[in-house]
Image (cartoon, rainbow, N blue to C red):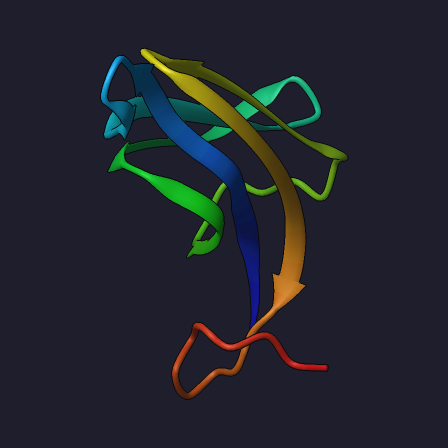
Length: 90
């Protein structure tokens, strides 16, 4: 089963007390077509999320995001286990 893998490389907000929770909205495109909008909050470091995309047209993927903190993300297609839907097959 193929899913869209959104990897959050980091997500946080800097404050005088250190890192705090942040909010972000990721927009995933296949070519020029928006196929997924995903909102997240908290702190993350190298955290993968597996998302379904019924409108995936097979075009190259890209991700754009808006955040109230610091964030870095990447996106790819991944084959996942059809039983649990979350573990990448190797």
